[in-house]
Image (cartoon, rainbow, N blue to C red):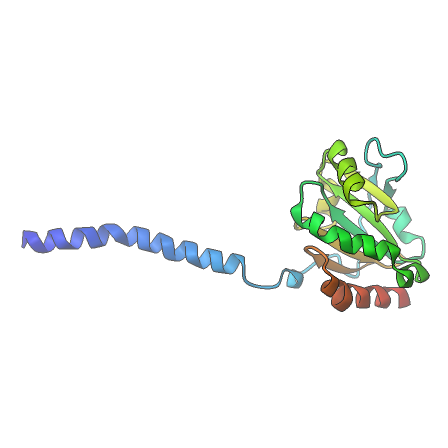
Length: 193
């Protein structure tokens, strides 16, 4: 009888480890499954929150912005970025391309940047190194404005109608495909309203 008990103990001792591995595997699968674009945003169809962001400290050429600049009659893209964000670096060439796009210029689409929880020197370095596609950059050092916008993480890009209403939210880095298939149709739709 003592041999049977000894044989069961090692198997029973492994049971918590097996349970933990199964649970960790389930969490890992759920973490990387699904489309982040399907995360709901309570702000779609609502006015942008009230805010006023100063310019990035030391960047004299690019002013900050507030909700007032988003209600001036033209469609605006508000791109949330940070120098410490690797996907922001990946999407930056797409933003630079958009800043030069003749179709967007003809539609009078503005591109604003919301610099999220960033050190001013690092933000200036990022713009100097990769180029500045933004007409205005607001510094959200505390992250409070990002929270009011419902930011899950950076990068995120919002399409704002000329009356200051949020029309669309793109979560994650912009790619040529997401620009063509998702963002441009939303910009065109917002420009018609």
